[in-house]
Structures are given as structure tokens and as C-alpha cells.
Image (cartoon, rainbow, N blue to C red; front, side):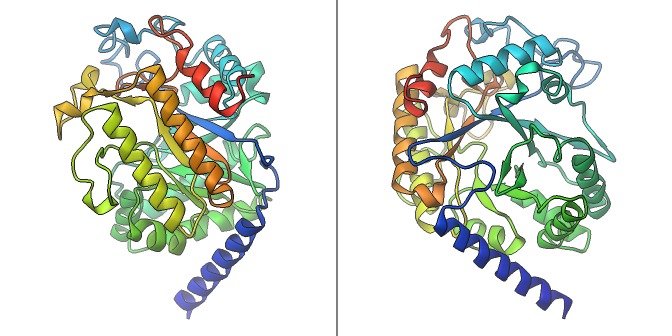
Length: 370
């Protein structure tokens, strides 16, 4: 009976969400007919010792690639002045919110260097923030850890006035459906049951719920099965790697150029916007080149997938066209990977070599060149 009731309640919520989607309803993060809501993922790994005492200089692997040196220099992302300048640039170039990669160690949050700097930065009112839970790890006691983590979010983040909300609910991105499902199963429960617990805790804390966004590829299992059944509100992605066009099932080789990577993204966009039963926030990328961190293991040629500013602009333009073609399903919301993934070669933050070229393209495509 409990399982039956939970399933019925989830179906009812899904029907309600679909009706709201058809009506184009968004209470606290609405966009106009010609407006776009653009977010950018932020890798908070640029502070001394962030990966342990053995890595005093997180920039050391990047220094061999001087073209990637940020315009701010080899900065410390835990300093308010660093994040303040980054927020000013985001606001100036049409980025509406920043989603910080966020990690949970056993029983506690990992160091929140950049997030804490954000919460002290004067410009935080101009650029809202959200969390991307980077849950790509096995967890031994998933139920207990989930409860502790949700409580932490509610105390320290989800009720903050700067926190991004959609339909009145704070937005949380979840990186891996696989690990969420498998860790829950190992603990004798389901992802849906964990989501239900989080929603109950949020309502008890005075919120209407949590707007969970699952990062997923274009596959039936995730988009039309797992995500809606577990109670997610929307879909998106951190990044995609496959570079062959056609159907999602036929995309089996990583890209070997940005042209191929772009084609892979366009295939994912089209399938998800046409087939997902949930909203889909269109993900975009500046490219991929993981050589500073040891190269791509599946295919070293995948590291040839960096973009030029002009290629990036064409990629953004195609994403905007998809948003325009599906304004209700896509809610004119896009996610860019990434602000500063310098180790993986996915970044739009100004650098000594490219200056503001990538940010200028974002403003040109999504903010009318303002």
C-alpha cells in the first residue's frame, strides 16, 4: 500500500508538473517571450590544498598550458575579490546564475571555498547560485548520508535569498543518476524514496519543495522512465562526450573535433526536447581537452575537441534555435560547461590568450549583444 500510494502521488505530481509546463508557469524565475535564463557550471578547485595537503598548488598541472592562464592570473577561488570580479563579468556578459560543483564527504560537506566567497561577494544579488551535487562516488550508508546532506542544504543554502528558484523551489542539479540509483539500492531503498524524503524535509522547512534537475543522456530509461518516476522536476547535463550524429543508441565513439562534439550535442538536444516528459535545460559546451589532467582515457583523440570562439558561437546559436523551437519544454533555460574547468578544457572565463572572446559570444547570442 505504501508503494502504491507513493507511485500514485508521484504520478499526480508529474501530471501537475506537465500542466504547469504546458501553461508556461514559472513563479520566481520566469522569462519573457524573448528572454533566456543562462547558467554556467563552476569548478571550485582552485584553492591551495583543496584536493588535500599534498597539492599546495592546484594550478600546477595547468601551468604547462599557458594559453589557459586566467586573466585573473593563477587565482585563489576562496577569496571574495576573485569571485566578486567573476560575478561582475558574468552579469555583464549575460549569465544569470552560477551552479557550483558541490561535494559531500562522509558526514560533512567538502570545503566550500568558492561558494563561501560567493556568499560574501557584493555582486551576488546580480547572479544567483545553485548547487550541482557531484555524486560520482559509491556511498556505504546512502540513506543516512542523504538525510545529513539535505539537512545541510536546508540550513546553509536552499533558503538563502540569492539561491536560484524555479516555480518557487530551490534548484539542485544531480550529476549522476547511476550512482544515485545504485547507492540507494545498496542501502535497501530507491532514488524515488530519497527524493520523497528531501521534499518532505523541504516542506517542513517552509519551502514548497526542491526542484531537482537530473543530468542525463538522451536515452529512454533516464528521460522517460527513471527521472519522472523518481520525482525529478527537469533534465539537463553537465557535459556530453559522444560526437557522432544519428540516434542516441548509435553514438558510441567520443568526439575527435569540436565539430563532432557539436553534432553530438545537437543530437542529444533534439531527442530530449522531442521525447522527454520533463522540461530540459539545454546544455552547451566550450569544448573538451583533458590533457592537463592526464588525457582522456577512453580515446586520447577526444582531447582534440576544443572550440574556437567562432565555433562556440555557432554552437550557442544552434542551442538558442532549439530553445526557440521548444519554448515550453526548454523553458528558455541553458547550462554552459563551464566557467573554469581548465583541467578538462571546458571554460569561458577570460584568459590571457582569448580575452573575453567566449563571454562576448554568450552576450551576443543570449543577451542581444547588450
